[in-house]
Length: 325
Image (cartoon, rainbow, N blue to C red; front, top):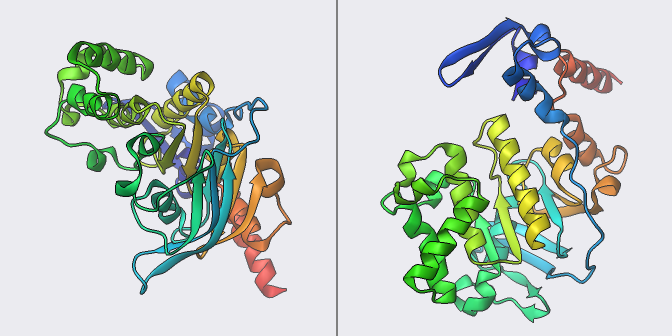
């Protein structure tokens, strides 16, 4: 992240595929880069936010007073309520340890809530994924943060995508072959990777494969848990563009777990803010992530890196003045 590097370094070297593209003083790289690749890295943070058409206001997912944790000794979430509608990109933000991933796992049925209820398209959502009817289970899919952990390294790409097609829809071999090719095309992946193992793919390709596997189930809601945090800026930007394209094409809704408020401002239309397992605010993006609403939100906004070399020094000066006052 160049915005972070800008606070720590007085000189930047830009590499691409093992070659030096450009080098220079930090200010020169940020504001007077000469190479297209460098300019693309710098401009990534200035991308325009997604556009949302007014869709259905009937929620597909309703969570009422959800509490969850990892056994009685480790409660994490308390009294969480939210609604997600078709076409929403509902971001959940907060500091590390605030309960974001725990909320995602509870909704997906990967951990059992300790309280509260959930409904999906008006139907009660059983707490555990193993207790959910197959057709209900397929409608909520999960894309994990680290594809290296989420993908079986011994299964070829074709087999990874074929499994949900056979499991949820009972497709025969020819129908599976056709659908796998469609999924790879939709993910903008070459067809010849179908016979490769995940270890032969780049980080961005692996994450596209994870998204393809989720899409294979024809879900209504995809839960994305920090799915771009392990990718470089440009690859992450391409993944976000792909998700936006799929949302528009298939009317998907996303629950997007992230700590990056700069990213949230580009992709989301709704947001919930968690602090120590409790929801302190939620609503439309432009009405929730605003200065002055809550001191905690102010701190989160203040910590979004800015593409200026004096950003961090300015924060330190302001905090020192607050302490003195």
